[in-house]
Amino acid sequence: MKKLFPFFVGFFAFSNSFAQDWRTATRDSAGIAPDPHSEKRAVVQVYAARTVDWRGYFAVHSWIATKEKDANEYTTYHVIGWRVRRGQESVVVQKDIPDRHWFGARPELLEDLRGEEAEKAIPQIASLAANYAYKNTYRAYPGPNSNTFISHIIRNVPELKMELPPTAIGKDWINQGDVVGWSESKTGVQFSLLGLFGFTVGLNEGVELNLLGLNFGIDFLRPALKLPMVGRVGMKDKAF
Image (cartoon, rainbow, N blue to C red; front, side):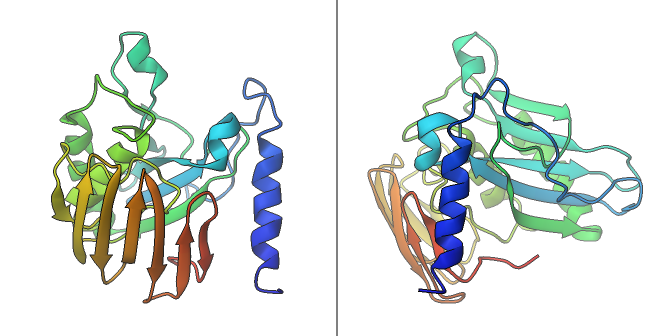
């Protein structure tokens, strides 16, 4: 029971965030990213936070923040769905606070590269964002959506040895709707039918089953269950 206590506390915390009006919810820094004036090395960080309103019970929104070596500001990369409805491209690349609360929801740090690894990753991230195939297409479910975009970058940047959480609905839309591909961490394989049905087997991912876009799985490397809505129950995927 004690092991489950942090989970219940966390679930209660993010549930409370949905009661907020998104128009007035905080967008302040969560204080996670290093100060660019003191961290002179290049930085790449991947974040995820619960989405707005009732959708947050099911899914997170993910994004990437980068900082060039000796730069004094961050660039963020993510996809915003409503932009497509207004005739704009979904991909947003801008100078911004890297670790903003996502309309009241505190972000979780999923990956943190520094130095040479980050320097190698940054131009690849920029190129993949510029050439993203779904700039003018957005479907919240089952994708392509904001998590599809970040998953696409993760899959194609060797330095990003990670995976998105099971609550990142849309991550299982492989590249341009491919049926078979490498897993996000590049340590296994994935079968996916348009992000709705499929499975993943990998050293880092363990075993995951995708049913209607909802992920169920077991991570054997860092023992944990992966569940819809809940996310990981057990060891964290990475410790920072």
